[in-house]
Amino acid sequence: MYYSPVPLLIIRADAPALIEVNGHPAGECGADSHIALPLSDSGDYYVALLPLFDREDARLYPVTRKISFENGSIRSRPAPDVGICSWPGGVFELTMRAGRLRCDSACRIPYRIDHIEPRLGGRTFQLTLYYETGLKLSIEESNRALGGYALGEGESGSLDVLEFGGASFVAAHTQGKYGERLLLLSAAMEEALDVSAQTVRIEAGTVEAIDPLGTLLGHERRIRYEYEKGGGFVPSPAETGFFTRAPRAPRGTLERAIAFAEAVREGFEAEAMSYLADDLAASIGFDALREFLGTFTAARPPISDGSGRFLGLIAQEDGNLSCARLYEFEFAEDGRIENITEA
Image (cartoon, rainbow, N blue to C red; front, side, top):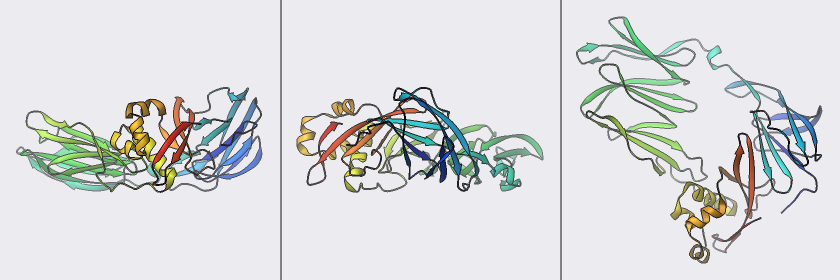
């Protein structure tokens, strides 16, 4: 494994950008590429990110951030839009975010999305879902405003009347870049359920809220809400599985190591143990595995190493500062893991 003889700064950006360090061009980078520069043990570095083009959802503008080192360590917390991960061997990985001027709300003219006039409980209501600096829902009766809801960011949606357990509800279902939201209103126009998730759907008379866990295989967490008369919508315990997609099969030793680490992190005992060779699985229990790997939020290889032998487990230390612990994996001929050591 490579250990830098001097501290090394790795720079990434969340959008294609030109990077300048202390006023000098250092090169281009993005989310899938990086720039590497040697560092002094102590000193201040002024890193500027100059976006090369705008994102679809925002106009990007340059930012400059100060990073300070002392005796080979970060001297002070960086700005909130900068993340720094410390790797073994004196390597610091810096991820910068470009400034954003979001133009969605400023550039759009208000427009109506859907309108219904249901008759519930002997009363007729007028409900309108529309866009005006975000999604909004207005509720009227006989042309008199009863109230409304601000439903957050989104681009589209629909209004409908649904039945659960023999009771009727107005459903406002909205979709945006970051997921979906379902608002259910009773016949008296009172909030009965309000859920947000990556996917919100109704299956067999049950509301399901499904979010990805961010794993390589695509695991998802699902919470189901069932209607009980007199008790409203009651959530069930969260389930983990593959509800909107089939699991992805890991390819190669690197993806198998990542899938194994994520299974340990999420507590998927059977899945984690299936990646181990028989001898290793017989000699170590799942609890011991979790203790050995410790707490971490992400698993990825060290810089410029896709061999699958080494994997960094990233643990948050304090806000935007994190630390990577390095593990070495050995694989049997059938692709299963036969040994793990901390590098």
